[in-house]
Amino acid sequence: MMRSFSIAAVAAVIFSVGLAAHGQAYRAPRSADGHADLNGIWEALNTANWDLQDHSPAPGTMWETGAIGAEPAGQGVVEGGVIPYLPAALEKKNQNFADRRTKDPEAKCYMPGIPRANYMPYPFQIVQSPNGILFVYEYASANRFVNMGKPQEAGSDTWMGTNNGHWEGDTLVIDVTGLNGLAWFDRAGDFASDQLHVVERFTRTDRDHLQYEATIEDPKTFSRPWKISMPLYRRVEKNAQLLEFKCVEFAEELLYGQYKKK
Amino acid sequence: MRSPFSFALAAILAALFAAASSGVAQSSYTPPKTPWGDPDLQGIWPGNMGVPLQRPKNMGERAVLTDEEYARRVAQAKQASAADAVEFAPADQKIGIGPPSYWTERGTPTRQASLIIDPPDGRLPPMTPEGKAVQAKTPAQWAGKANSYEDVNLYYRCITRGVTGSIIPVVYNNGNQILQAPGYVVIRNEMIHESRVIPLDGRPHVGPAIRMYMGDSRGHWEGNTLVVETTNFTGKTSIGSNGVAYNGEGGRNSESMRLIERLTRVDANTINYEATVDDPKTWTRPWTMLIPLKRDDKYQFLEYACHEGNYALKDILAGARAQEAEASK
Image (tube, rainbow over all chains, first blue to last red):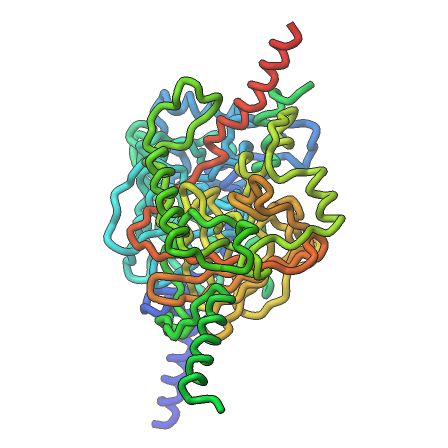
């Protein structure tokens, strides 16, 4: 009797360890209002900002920067592998790629838009307050406030969109509309129009990871909705904090150099 | 011998004097708490225009306007709002008119004689010789030189207005939003788009080689007051409206400035924002300004895509080149 009990106990322990190892048993810490707590400083660790799709290593746009400016290889984050462009939009993407040194909004230090803000090579902080959720991005001091109350209709189009959030279980779902279509998705010239509608899902899968998904819909640019997904990593350094990357002054020569007094 | 009455009168007078001299009415208001027990400062708190940084000299140490002076200030504010509504500049106007009235949000001015409450005369203390030298070499107010974008101030370049320049009320986009999470307070400013995420965990400042326009902020609570200490500045920002210091209303601070901000919710709808500028390289003594911020739940915080839409900077430079070409003909 005693013996079978201890076997059962051991089996239970093994079973629960197994579950935890698969992430099934993880329960995110709670915020004061009982939702999953997503507070923290997060950052992508991939090459999506170079190109959302599979890509080989490639030289940069300026030979002067040598290997420093070169593009690392990377596996794509697009579900199914390929962005379903309409034919005219694919032509525009290819033109964007050819012009990327001067036309990529990142080169000009413009706001990154959604979804790009979340996988640029800079950290961002989620501040989950009882009044709403603020995303603060280090890149270009960009930010966006996610309204968690009654959904609001988008006013004028903006770079960072009108953000209405809600919870589906422990997943934060953000519906982003009112995007101006001027931001790109990556340095490869991937883009959308002002008809862009993004639905994002953030799920804390363990202490140090958020799973990020975005469904992208734009009938003017794509033949069907498509999806990207990737993990975001918590910056675990004890002294982790956002610093300042006000890049306007790094882009001024590019933007205004031709108007300077010679 | 003193009568109890005169004693009480003296006490009341002393209390009134203390309140007037600090510029802050002492408040017995207890703010609500966040679920984790911090005083709750959350909300949208724009400031109202109409109070000059410095007090007119003839007012001396009088910190509050008389009824008559206040009536004049309110009338001036109304006049300014009416001028905003003028759609076209008069034909003889040399250059520029204000923004259209649907942009402006002047609000109702307060009775404060000046934003500066210390020194007691409400005026900037004298600059040090070093401060004066920096000011003369790189005036904070743009004087029209346009050989390069670097000749134009940080505000017109859409880089930043600095910490105090982001709070001092101006003619539009005065939104300040405060959000809190356990261990953090965020002060978000609408214009330019800034968000200072302020840790409250007592960690040390970042190392001295890291400089930031908005500085490195650390906060703690003293009773119900949020005290924020900010260092690691660049020395490129200025103190004044929009961080520009128009007409000598402020000046360029040094990289070693220590800024102490104190935010106290004195009633349900008011946060008293006090900022003490401690910059011995630039000013001969610390000085303090007080800006009451008024809660406005209906305020619409807009995206201020300043740099993205900065046609003015290109036009300033291109215009200067066109004038040069014209002159050399």
